Length: 256
Image (cartoon, rainbow, N blue to C red; front, side):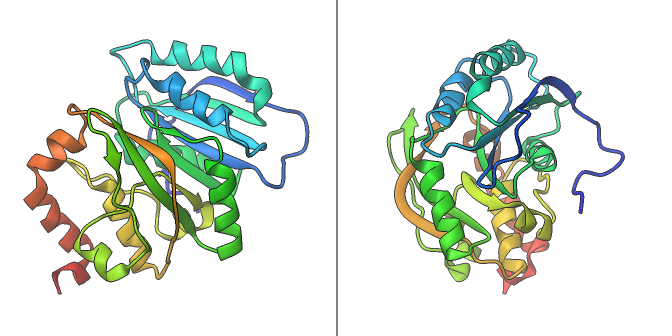
């Protein structure tokens, strides 16, 4: 099932590389969404290259960055590091589409059933994918998330905890940095665009709607960069009340 509609704009291929060998059985696709993060995306990509899990693919979807040289930075990094990976792709949207569209596009192009989501300003610790992948398979979960470390303008530990549908209906405490089965993404219809944000919360609520229960790995493996100019700190915070109404409309059980 394709989440991308026939009328949606097709991305431009900026960089593409694939080894001639057979696709690895344990391949993980890392979906990296980028929008004008040329100054930090190499740090993100380096953290992926440093993973102890061997078989990796990266799909970067750039959301029409025009304020910096993101595409040049990404293409140069991929050329220099391509031997580390089974496959590398850098795609760019012809116009700005938002994070949900970009993530869905990455899933569409992923060659693996296992897709890890990360924004270009975040990073992961070296054993992250190895441990999350093992937890996903052993627990037969549709997705697995971990505890996060905050860095940047604020330093601290995130609020992740064991999955609890009743608690999730009250507020979101699970970051979108997670390893997700492509089949689960398809079952919930992928990510949906929501003005001012909360696409991540909506995505996890759709897991509840579909009767899917992600697993929690209680270890700090992912790093979330906090900066005051982010969409979360500006648009989503200001529109908090309106977004609560949108969530109740999209997921009626929240209003009960």
